[in-house]
Length: 337
Image 1 (tube, rainbow, N blue to C red):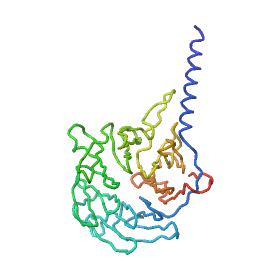
Image 2: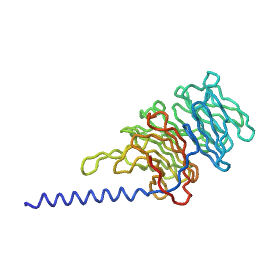
Image 3: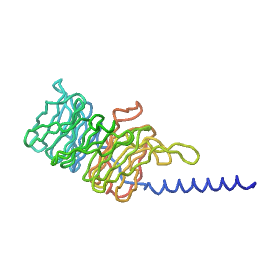
C-alpha cells in the first residue's frame, strides 16, 4: 500500500502531460509578417481597403497603393466597410446620426432617424443595421426604407440574416442571441446559455462571446446542422488547480472559414495576442503576441487580418497603432511587444 501515493502521483502527472499535449496541438504557431499601417482605433477591412478612426477622423487605407486618405474630419467613430461603401457613427453636427460614404463618388449621406449615441452600424450589401434604445433597425439604402426588426442591441448582418443580443424579446429566457430572417420575417433564439453577447454572423455560422466568466470565451452555432460548439475554452482548471480559458471574448470577428479574436492572458490555452481560428481544422494560430491585459480589436477578410488597441481598455503604456497581417505572406519572425 505504500506505493499507492506514488502511483497516484504518476497518474496525475501523466494526465497533466496529456492535458498539456492536447492544448499544444490545438494551437499552431504562425510566422506571418506584421506591418504597421497607421495610428488609431476600430479598424475594419474589406477587399483592398482598411478603414479606421483616429480621434474623430475616418481614414481609408488602400492596401494596393499603400495610400491613406481622410474621408471624414470630425465627429466620427465605429467605422465599417462593405465593398465600396463606408458607414460610421457621426456626431459632427452635435446630434447622433449614421454616415454613409460612397468611395468611388466620394458622396456622403446620413441616417438620422432612430439613432442614439450608442448606435454602431454594420453593413452588408445595401443593408445597414444598428440599434438604438433597445431596438434593432435596418435600412435599405437602395430604396431608402427603414424598419425596426427586433428588440435588442449590437446587431450584425449577413445577406438576409440579422443577429443581435436581446434581454427582452424571448419570454422564456433572460439573455439570448436572436436571429431575424428578412425573407420570412421569422425570429429564432440561437443561444440562451450563459451570458452571450457580441453576436457575429457569416453564411451559416453565428458566433458570440459568452462573458459569464472573466473576459469570456467564443461559441459558434451552425444554422445548417443546428449544433453549437465551443471555439475557445470556457473557464476551467488544470490538474494543479490553475485557471485557464475565458480570456478570448472581448472582440471577435468571422469571415469565410476564419474567426479572429484577442487573447489577453497567458495560460495553458496559449500566450496573449491576436489569434486566427480555422473553422475547418479546428486550429488556432497566434499571429502577433502582446503583453498580458492588452486588448485588441482584430478583424478579417480573406487572408488579411487587421487590428488596433481597444479604446475601451486603453492602458497608458499601450500604443494605438493599426497593424496588418497577411496570412499568405512567406514565413517571417513572429513579432512581439
